[in-house]
Image 1 (tube, rainbow, N blue to C red):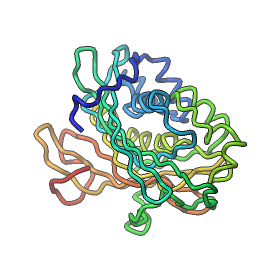
Image 2: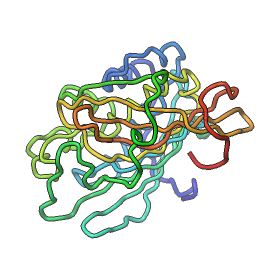
Image 3: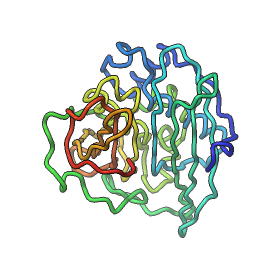
Image 4: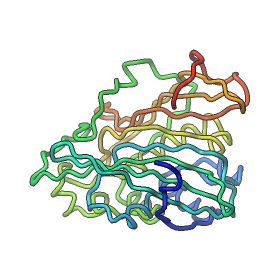
Length: 297
């Protein structure tokens, strides 16, 4: 939708060091990239915007994050204030499933856009949603091939691992403002198709953000982009790990956009929970690989 239609103001935040550190601790990111660069992680700013969106737009309890896109226009230095705006698309129905897509933008004090993207959540209106087995994609499934079947892992790309805990979910809820009871309330979660508490999708996606930051450094904070689908749920006690590989490079006026195939998998089952692509603009063509072509993320 046109930028003029993103008329719902979600709030203003200062990208200060303390809330950034609170976010990084919540997602388990132990790298010092943001502190050294004095730049806020784009996914942290996006998480704050989405947390405010959940509260402001009054989405149904138990809404499930399905798709997430993010594009960093420029880095946001510590101390800068940003304001988030959102616009809600027309809901779509597919049987008992309702899909709600919202676009968002974060702007600096002078109106300059620094981050933009969109997210899709789904609501299951079935009277008794069918249960989803652990590791199953369930209602979040896509037809995308398993990344592990496409190519072997490249050891040179950082692998980020994490075990999901209740303390982590509580910390992430406080750091992001996402208090969906699906992630916090065992009694409510028991009434859903998942049967028990699951992790926030943005918390699992943070593993990809950390992997990209470790691979590409400051460039990720200044130009990182994501286009991913949440295929399955992470439960308490699940051990997750990232699988990422460079795929293609695209020539741009400001440098080379390196696109990577990315995924988050559950260790025991080997199931993909997050899959899609991430990209970063680098100054030359020395990193990554693949054919050069034009196209979306």
